[in-house]
Amino acid sequence: MTVPELRALLAHLLDVRVWDVAEILRWSKWRQERNRRAEVSHKKRRLAELQQTSQKNDTDASTTKNVRPDKHTMANSLTPPSRPT
Image (cartoon, rainbow, N blue to C red; front, top):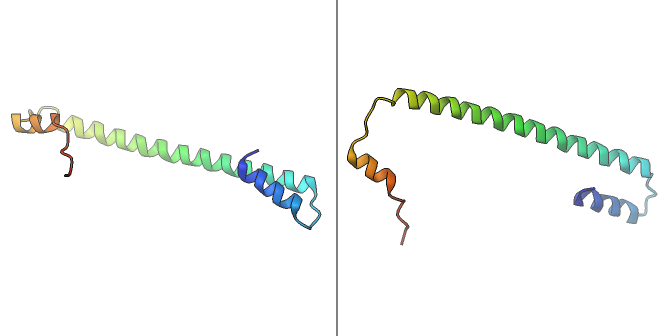
């Protein structure tokens, strides 16, 4: 059980109302399933975003493949960013 589920269970058990254990377990299973679906959805969306970024980078790389950077551009890309004082 997760911490929020345990807290909810304790709150239910300490409440004046008489709780049915089956009701609490149904709620727990519902919450776990809801969290599982949210995780799957998040991973699916993130994977699609990464694939779009990858395709964009591949396209950008292919269009600039034959372009040779000048020495100032190369020097700037090798130096770390300056820290604010």
